[in-house]
Image (cartoon, rainbow, N blue to C red; front, side, top):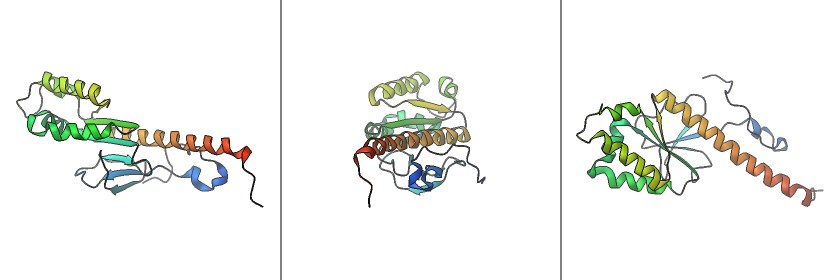
Length: 180
């Protein structure tokens, strides 16, 4: 793995030391059986409340649920639908949430999967879930492309939270006297 990060440093306050040079850490759920090939950010395994991927320190606000086309189609079946809807319901509490589908939407449109569920039913279910659970569905053609999306989302989420903390420190700085 390269030591040069493709991501610029986070905008942390310089007086905090080397924190600006740190990278966000992806948390991959321990139940994830075939993890995405994340290569540009550090990855740790951990048990997540919901979703398959998060960012260390942001586990209560950032979640990505990953599905393959066969998994997604199975989740649209009556036998698995309730469990999947419970997962999407839990995601509603997260500031950043995504349903990441590894595969091509045309595979669903053309019925290129092993199930008797009609493609229109799968796509209609996805559209309903996007609206009902306010969870965008994003397709990535390969696991590598999906990993890049998770890395990008994690880095930008971390940057936004670091900026928020920086703003809090800057706002308080004029009112706080330095320690003698």
